Length: 236
Figure (cartoon, rainbow, N blue to C red):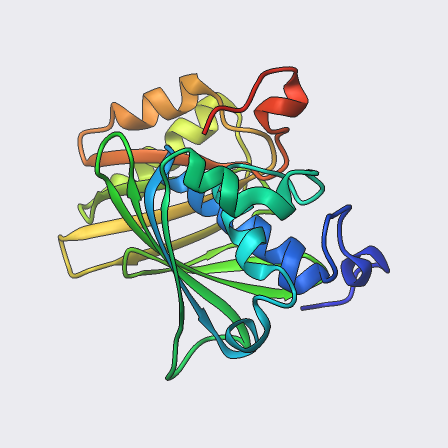
């Protein structure tokens, strides 16, 4: 990661001993919660590398679960996140993974939505200073930093789909800062990830969902305030 400023090393305002093992982990969990779009009834958490060796001592387990509850990195409830999640009906398991992994601080989450039964597998890395990279979503290779509002579009790999997506962005005056795309096979399922300069709106996601080849749209915005900080009660 290219050095930008001292805050890239110190990390964000946070609860916990480590910007990479705690703050970064919470941001990965929160990104996964937003991609899933609902409370996870089942959360299978597999740690790799340094995460696997030290996750209990550094509170990485509690940070990940706090993120799955949509807690920000400085939320005072993070130390109690596991108990709060289980009280809300989340079935949690932690594992230590082996084999190849993309970074020493890597976690793989397999989530099942409590209400819909929707499943999500997401792999994220904490690269220092609270910064993260989501590198895999349901077998698609992606790059999602969480630093900017992000739209994830599941679609079929048909001719002209990207042109239609970018045209929607142009007409809505949304500037694309970064794009990544992966597909299962030619003319098969694909995932496009767009990092934007401004938050996505319901009108934008609705228009994207109206495109013939688009199957689903989700939004990740780690900069938005959680419900409690907006004056609302957070309900697991």
